[in-house]
Image (cartoon, rainbow, N blue to C red):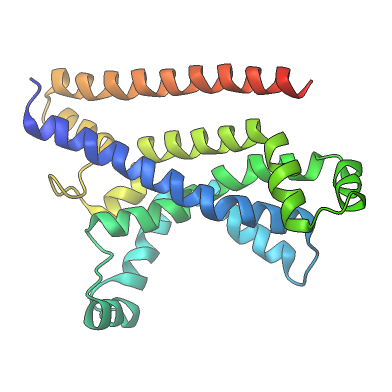
Length: 226
């Protein structure tokens, strides 16, 4: 029942989720801070674009990703000819598509935490001579750890369970782009319910364990902040 392809598929699944989460931790927190603390032209437009994947069908995003980065597109040809980068039906392409599609799941919790953060604490830090960067890193970030953890978990879980985008962008290449959600679909189509159930149980267990640990950590941080 448990063969090398099964293990390989799970490795790719959690590798994709990990890469996506790490990238969005680096990109999502500054973006959320920008949207929460800064006023600029077209801010509403940027907010709409960032949150569009929440309501956008994944197949739509996958389709336009194929159109934009396919081998016959100008961008696709440029990346392939000058940088030897191919983003369609590759793991790298899955990472890029997953980052785009999971962006709001990282940004929204952190954005809400930034907006509700007491402005008096920030002003007090400035009065004590701390710079904006020091205040952000040493005052704001430590006090919104629960939101950051929530965003990371939502991003990880959303990527693990994503089907439409990864199918459109990566297809189902064993050892390269085949992830667990697609494997479940293929096993069900082949009436191989035992193996589909095995994939599903692993994802269920990992998802439950991740959420359980997250709730414990958030409770711990909340008590510390009090």
